[in-house]
Amino acid sequence: MNLTMLLQLPFHGNGAWHELQCRQLSIPLLAWALVLPLSLLPPVLLYYAGSHYDEHFMAGFAGKEWRFITTILFLAELLTFFVMGWLIHSVVAGKDTAINYADAYLIAAIAPVPLWLSSLALLVPSLAFNVVVVFIAMGLSCTLIYHGLNALSNRPDTDVEAMSAAYTVMAASFLAWALLMVMVWAF
Image (cartoon, rainbow, N blue to C red; front, side, top):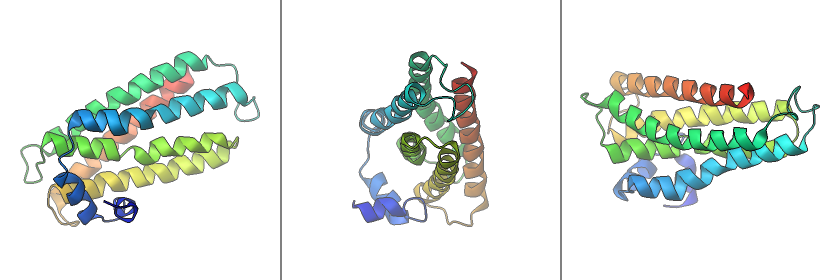
């Protein structure tokens, strides 16, 4: 697996998805080696931004309890990985698009990578820049879900059942992301 294949994952990458599938990565390995380190990025960078940027970044941004908020965010991100893996498996279970738990958690681990990496935009103290980066990351995350489900369930891109499953998972992902953001700004 090389960098070129990994960069193809959001766009088509059937070969890259199948190569990842053939590696038979265990759920604990995905959690420890990919999810845990990358899910540390948003809380750490949000804490940095919250403790270094003033009210010019966004109204009410500087006066929050960032240590508490970022700890809760980190724990919620870890929980979201396990819930999304279960959800992906449940959505496609019993259909022709069924995939096993390991593949469902593979998608659940890889799909949020653009969102986790988008937190690096917090190093730039510009709200507009951060919003644009997050929306691009959300789009890439959706394409990872879509192409991952199609590739791992061995369905063509035009398969209606695979599309339906992917859209259901995307909707749940948006809901989870929105809940995380509400949680951050509510405190």
